[in-house]
Image (cartoon, rainbow, N blue to C red; front, side):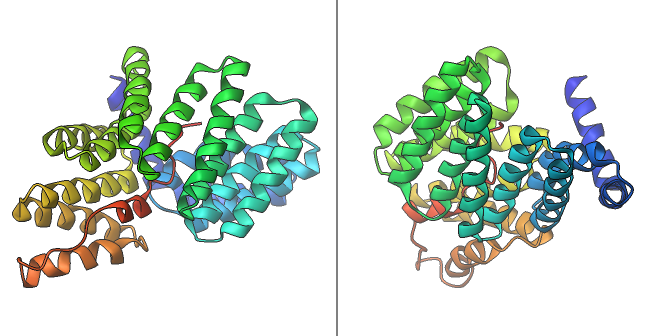
Length: 310
């Protein structure tokens, strides 16, 4: 019943999101500023999951202006953090860091530990996108400590997964696997499917680089199943691409080609810029099977847009 309701909500957003965009503009133009920041917030998961980052950026600029007019610093910080997400996915990392620094300043002034934790967690994501993995780990660890002090278990578990992911990006795959397993155990206990999906992906990444290809296939497959259930198309494609890397490393070129083709179909449908990376990996398998594309740390470049759920 819960999954059916989720799919119904996604279908409604798919059908109505252009109307919602117009509604946000109308709310801002007519002085309904509470609606002008709350509606973009409510649309975030759908927009991120479908790769609508230009729309997300536009909406969060509107939300930020509305929050400033209201004098609501909590709403301002939230809009700045969500705007930074869109900035990062659009490749504007300087702007993303500026917006996150502003969000962090507002949260510190308010004594908002959760807001600070979420800003640090997103800082970690931005640093991952720039391949500054040591800095990403530092921010993820700071987020973890703040979530723990604030007593927010959901945020703490998301940050724990972020820490494990960063260890993997830094090449400490044993530590990455250990921390990801800790996070996964908590997500399985509390039934958080969103968190499970990203943590299975983190676990698969560590297992792939440890040469545990069968285990990695199992972990990635479970992550993909959950992404499909949740309607998160971008993350589904991301994990499919990493699964293809594992198939290739295990010597199954046919499965690798088929899996990359699935990922590419989604990314092309979403007009995702990283479709070019997948197409480049596919090309040798389509033309000369013996000429294999490289696998390895560069697969981290297809990091999903929201690994935190916060």
